[in-house]
Image 1 (cartoon, rainbow over the protein chains, first blue to last red):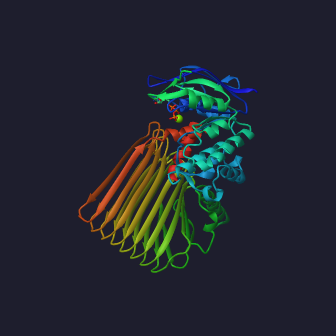
Image 2: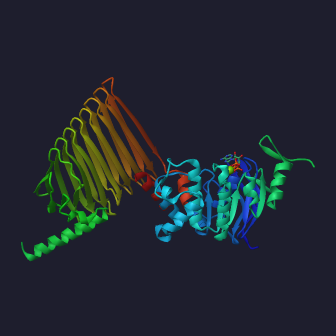
Image 3: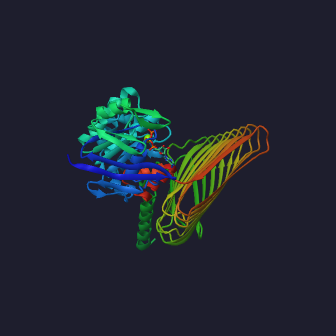
Length: 245
Length: 320
Ligand SMILES: Nc1ncnc2c1ncn2[C@@H]1O[C@H](COP(=O)(O)OP(=O)(O)OP(=O)(O)O)[C@@H](O)[C@H]1O
Ligand SMILES: [Mg+2]
């Protein structure tokens, strides 16, 4: 399989603290790749570094997207290449209608049909007629806001979608919808990097990686990786140690 | 009137029509005889239409127009009354003196569009005296559209008296184009059981200067009011907001709410003043000035907008 993203020795410091300590990772074109690992392992930080957020400029290493190093590009430039991010806690936009928000990623209202917007809302299990004219603001519940965030990723038709815990704040019965949404992204030609604490999502991926203390510990078959995480690592003092065999 | 001046006039009507449409107005209503309307270009009244219950007197002066509008007792005007004020040339002065009366029990909505699409050196002055009679209601929306040059001074001044049980809602918006200088000064005398809500939304850019002063005196028992201002400033724009609410009568309730976002070198000052001299009155305020939320900007950038466009979307949302 062709490789779309290669991370080589990616390191990140924030406020004098080592957050990423030489991350190496490869994501295949069209692959669903999940990142698992305990709280504070550096998963969100890795996502932010890939998107190029302010304060997440890597000290060392490279981010190769389709062979080109994008580590110095702005967020917008990365987005224009087809990379996008769904935040763990999405932002709210007072006064911005759902329909206009979903059109932004598609390049504006002129580049997307009403039916495409409605279809994206249906894919995240929101009734279009109920939500399309609402504001992406305080009046939405956390879970509704999360779903709209995922719908906005769908309408963007990205090449690489980075989803930071798309399952958090989503009720358990809707987990399978998140799985099918990730699959829909893949069918539309995207590679998906999904950060998750849910076994169901990890096991629906093509491959998985385990992060621990700012590094990728190992990558491989999702079942094997999550089995390893659950049975061979013990959380201790907010750090992970490998258990003796 | 010669054919030539007629042609000039019709061109002017057409220009104002276009400018009115650019400001968000619906030109069809200006030609609808079932709807009251008034179109003023500079110091010329281009068209005027009055419907039942609306009395409209106008007088052209050297620098503008004096208007007297009365909504007759008990009339509830079904369609909004449309007003269009503007100047098409790059320079000039327009002074509007407005004497407005909503007689007892009447109700009306005034929709004003003020449009100065080519402004380079323009002064637009508005002096209004408004009387909202007993149990009468006025909803007043004023939307400005200025050109990109910023050479305009907008000086709206109004004194509003609301009698017992009257209601006054105003919404002033200046978002499109450059502000230039805005010196907004409204003062309300609110009577017993009256309701007053004043909303101002302004987007300042470059070296725009925005001064907004709104004062409500809650003089009658049980009078209620809200002052709400939303200002966004970028580049070197400067704003001074003063929102004053005074509670002088028992059970009067007032609130001042000012929210501003600033970027670049913009400077904002917000002064909410609450004065209460009746122990049964209560007036509260909140004011917040901050920058545009970073996560919001980065989210929109991750959807492909550049930073300026992202900020624009966020600010327009706040001003929506
Ligand atoms: N500005 C900062 N200064 C110091 N430490 C920071 C800073 N920002 C993040 N960290 C630390 O970096 C580590 C990684 O955080 P990150 O949010 O990436 O973890 P995560 O794997 O996404 O965890 P979770 O599963 O809880 O979402 C944490 O220990 C966090 O406290
Ligand atoms: Mg996280």
